[in-house]
Image 1: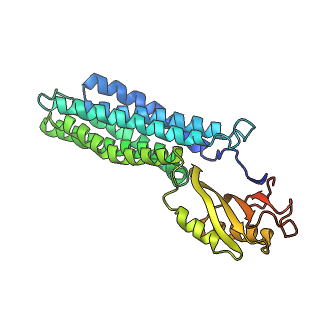
Image 2: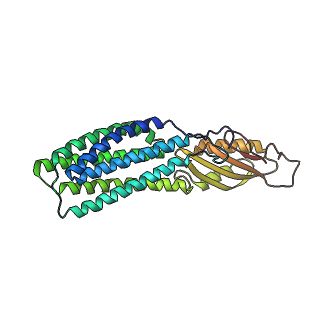
Image 3: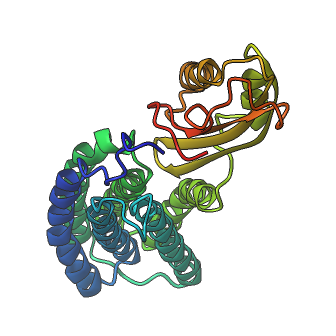
Amino acid sequence: MSSGHDHSGRSQHAGSLAWALGVLVVFAGVEIAVALSTSSLSLLSDAGHMVTDVLGLALALAAVLLARRASSARHSFGLYRAEVLAALANAALLIGVAGFVVVEAARRLGDPPVVAGLPVLLTAAAGLGANLIAFVILRRGAKENINVRAAYLEVMADAVGSVGVIIGGALMLGFGWRWVDPVVAIAVGVFILPRTIKLARQALRILVQGVPAHLDTGKVGDALAELPGVQSAHDVHLWTLTSGMDIASAHVMITCETDPVATLAGAQRVLRERFSLDHVTVQVEPECTDCRPCLFTEQATGSVSTEGGRGGS
């Protein structure tokens, strides 16, 4: 990477995370208190999800603040991966809560307890309002950052859960149907799990340095090999550092008659324009290592990034 790269964390989402966290902290406490006093499993489920929202947002905010730290000798890429770790932790937490609620609700179906419908209905409505506020705050950042997307999905799931609890509270209040409470709790858990598992898979793919889903190593190598004077492209590696930051490295072999500087410029252009890769290191290698009179000079060989900085030969 050249000195032009900025590996300090992208902190533009810290404000939205902080505001959403403050809103949910208040309403999580209210829901827990009412859920315990009314013995409502559906409301407790919704409160549990809101607590995971609070913990998830706190983790997300901490990760963003950590990612602000610039790169150093110990962390040459900075702490971008903290965002991905937080997303994975959030997903694991939400899967655990959803699993517990589904099991407990299934156990209660045989003998559902009496639940006061009105307090459940009113509290769930207030919780829905809090989730909608957080939902709007996080919406923009969720499109750009996997960490914010994890928090966004938690809030969205909780909002859906609140709707279910409102419906259940109305049915219990109007008809006295005790079985509605555990059924709503199961429905909320089933709704949440697939989306959360998908998020966990995305985070794991980044952590194990898998090739980004929208890129193909073979196509990238073929595109580099098609450049004038390039004999072959090898050791092509593609991975994601964090959301929206894909990285590539490659070696290209050229003939001794080929201008390495022109090849580097061509490689930069192809990777940027065809694959949207801006964080790239390309190593140019001569086809004949013993041809010193050719264009391979110490200044022209070595690693470069798409910003044009050169590494050592």
